[in-house]
Length: 96
Image 1 (cartoon, rainbow, N blue to C red):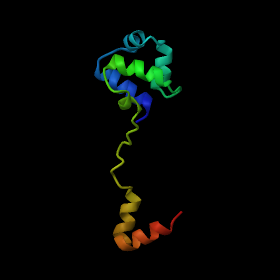
Image 2: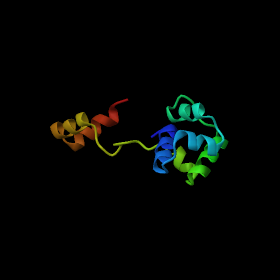
Image 3: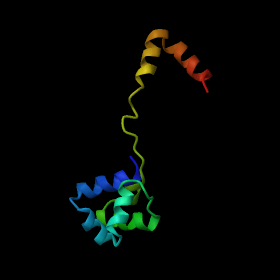
């Protein structure tokens, strides 16, 4: 998840409207919208303001979580089934 997605997620978890969060963090609503849609990246001081209002660590807003990162690609699973684990590892080591 991007910083913007994290801001939106925690704002919604706290049941804040965009207007509420923007007012409490002393930023513009359009600015907040541009952060949440990843059009702009907030400065560190803005991240700190938002995290204070949302009562969460700033690191939670900055964490980049990959969704479904633990799931293996279907093509890779098929390859492993077809040629075996050992051969798949050798093949993947040689690939760029």
